[in-house]
Length: 384
Image (tube, rainbow, N blue to C red; front, side, top):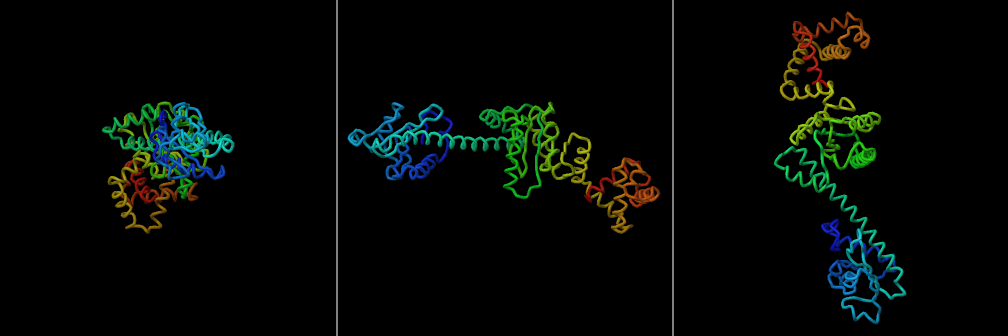
């Protein structure tokens, strides 16, 4: 059906096919009677009699002219070239006349059915239009999200146009959020994301007008606008923590479009770490883990492996792991000998011996406490 006045559906593809599917599905419900759907030019675009598709229907033209139903009786069929007896009803969408639906039969046979059909087809098309609009909006949102995540300032004009079309006005600074789960079933995972995002929208934690969100690389990305106000982010963290379904990675503050690409890289790395349910790069512990990860990617791994290799030259793998595990617990307990010994169920002297032995084997016994811990933490990272 071509649209005369309603801009919502004039660009929807394959609408004639949808109309044809509709008449074929509806005809059996009304005794197999012929149904036609005409566009705003009076042309039949869908019919249970496919030979009539593409022909002009004068009865429909009269409906389009007056906005009123037109009954064609057997005695006046000749007054309506290209038409047959039956009822022709206007189809309205948002108070606009968008087409005509006709049903074959005498006045007595089809008058009541035709009125019901007119209402039914209008409601059916409204649902179809809504679904198509949702699909197109989703596609445009996805396109806009991808452009923003690339951080390409050369695409500013397109980004602005898409933002205006979608009525999205993101307020900087923003944060890039990555929500992900361990669900193996991808279809179920996508359904879960959909339910969760609707929950967040319903509770005002996210907004369609100020935030942008969508699925990217098996995770759900949210560009959370106006992030100087941390209220919404804190609520989201509470929801994630209270459940056992999702993980959340949070980027640093993004003040420009180019920062968004950096934020996306940050949350992608945080996802690889997967140490905690909430990974916020602006929290000290997460920031250190992030920096260690980057250090390992840029030469740190080779250095740590050399140091670990030096340890294995002097001790068995089992003993080396015992020494490293002892150091790990020791540092986790804030370098408290008593607390670490208690955690490991060993004597304090045993713990001290192991720590000193590890320093000696790695050749760092004369370094500062900071350097010793840093190097051992680096070795521990390659084993995790």
